Image (cartoon, rainbow, N blue to C red; front, side):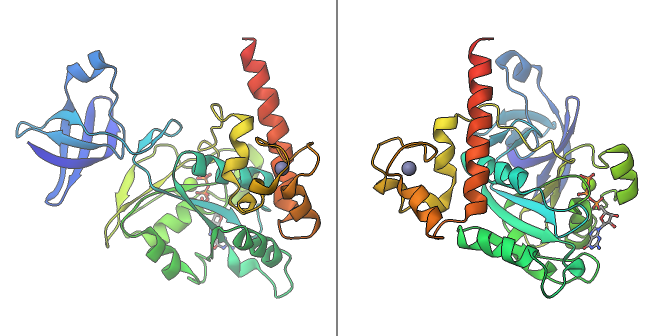
Amino acid sequence: MKEGIIISGVSSFYDVWTNEGTVRCKARGSFRKQGITPVIGDRVLYSDKLYLEEVLPRTSMLVRPPVANADQAILVIAAHTPEPNLPLLDRFLAQTLEQNIHPVLCCNKWDLVQEDDPIREVLAEYRKAGFTVLTASTLTGEGLDEVRAQLTGRINLFAGPSGVGKSSLMNSLVPGADQKIGTLSEKIQRGKNTTRHARLIPLPDGGFAADTPGFTFLYLGHLKYQELERYYPEFEGFREECRFRGCSHVTEPDCAVRAAVSTGKISRLRYENYTALYQKIKEDNEEHRYE
Ligand SMILES: Nc1nc2c(ncn2[C@@H]2O[C@H](COP(=O)(O)OP(=O)(O)OP(=O)(O)O)[C@@H](O)[C@H]2O)c(=O)[nH]1
Ligand SMILES: [Mg+2]
Ligand SMILES: [Zn+2]
């Protein structure tokens, strides 16, 4: 038996990447009986006759798109066109932390940024919150080396709104990625996503990267509003000082997180997005309780 990583799959056939190259294997019917669906990112054992025999235990599992063992998400926004949607970015950040996937914020289209551009201050707030923040331009090549170095050795997902340049980044960073690039006008007019299927692309220095279509990475269905605050790293060091255990930092008196917001130690922007997201998830959770 040999070991490899699934990099793409169509019906019951899977391309399995190994040190010696890629082999196409067929999944045994027994997987279906056991309720196991092999997905990209899965570490698998396969036989000499090229049957998938076993899916090894997963360290993480994303539902939409289905990817196993992803360990880093490159959350892409554009400095402009489209303008960053920060509440959406904060949802992505919370979700990746909740899934035990390391988030990296990558601001693309840096060629469009002026000296006094407010985006600089916005990114500074995310750095202050503890996130890794990179800037890049696929047009000028600026910042691409840093992004490439960040990818090495990991299973990376590129995620973010349509039109920010995920596929362009993949093409600039990964030789042979060959992702289809959409034109922005096309997308704004028809709101259509260019990238359709997720597949893993092996990186030259080790690791893999997957492009994902548009918004689909967003899946917070199972996140509990009571747990949301865990995924705000900048609350660390304050949440312990709140008067109430289990403080939501939304309405309770003597809340150390809110105090830190009013003294500027925690970004007001991030905090306001937190309370909005908290309310939204709370409503969603309550709706589903009565279904
Ligand atoms: N100015 C500028 N434009 C860019 C840059 N990178 C990509 N673009 C343009 O942005 C548009 C969208 O790029 P894509 O790579 O298709 O975006 P995407 O995020 O993959 O979009 P979906 O697949 O729909 O989710 C294209 O017109 C690109 O040419 C950049 O660094 N600077
Ligand atoms: Mg794309
Ligand atoms: Zn609090």
